[in-house]
Length: 166
Image 1 (spheres, helix red, strand yellow):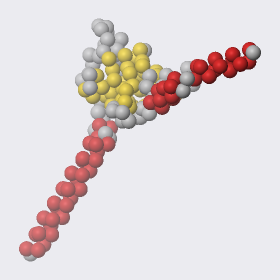
Image 2 (tube, one colour; image 1 turned 180 degrees about the vertical axis):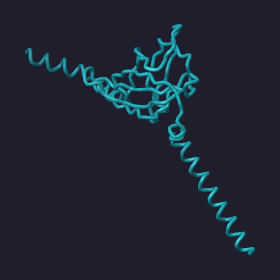
Image 3 (cartoon, helix red, strand yellow; image 1 turned 60 degrees about the horizontal axis):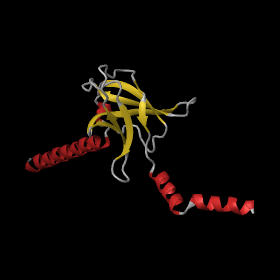
Image 4 (cartoon, rainbow, N blue to C red; image 1 turned 180 degrees about the horizontal axis):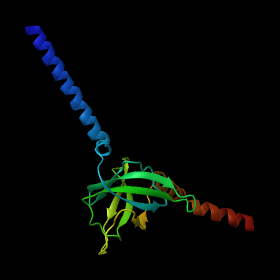
């Protein structure tokens, strides 16, 4: 009878450990907010370039998480990326003239959206559009531009036009 109690206790302890790991995995992955049905309101923003922005990427104001990216689509007419943002329902005092920028967490980290509040007395609500956006800065493009400048790309072009005139 004593060994049966020990086996039951160890089984219960193992079950608690597996449940704790499951909760930890859900917290780290960010899926826990979707599973709990977190309510909020959706706003959209159109960006020229979203870089490597992903669905469920954080949306912050001053470094504080206020929402997440809920969907990304391509506008077939303007060829801009339409990003739908789910903002927390308790963040209902964000001015409607706020701007959205895409930043990178660290040098090679994941992209996120940072909102910069404006000064309007009207606030964002469900279905609002953030019109002022700033695209992601793609590191590869910056390195390419730097290499072009260091390689004297403009001087080579000028030399070939001079040679063709003679």
